[in-house]
Length: 80
Image (cartoon, rainbow, N blue to C red; front, side, top):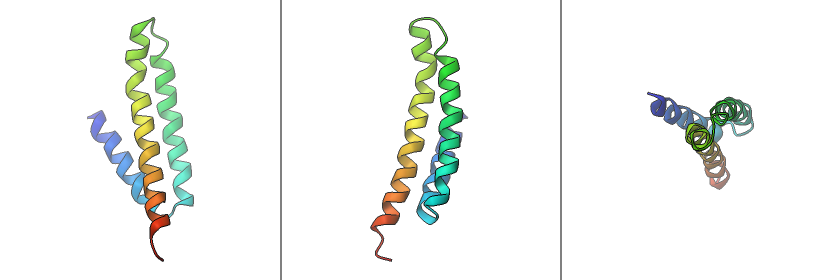
């Protein structure tokens, strides 16, 4: 369920970044902020559990960043 939500967010950000690159920055930052909060909360668990609980949030945040930058990069390569 959560994986589907992250994939949907990535697709929406990539499309938004392709069509309106400047307006895609705000939703991307908001997504990073919320995923970062989840990673911080998960990281408060002791020891190895903290890393295990925060890892999905870090991975999802990295995926969101890559999809947004990929959309903007593809837009920059267009001939128009």
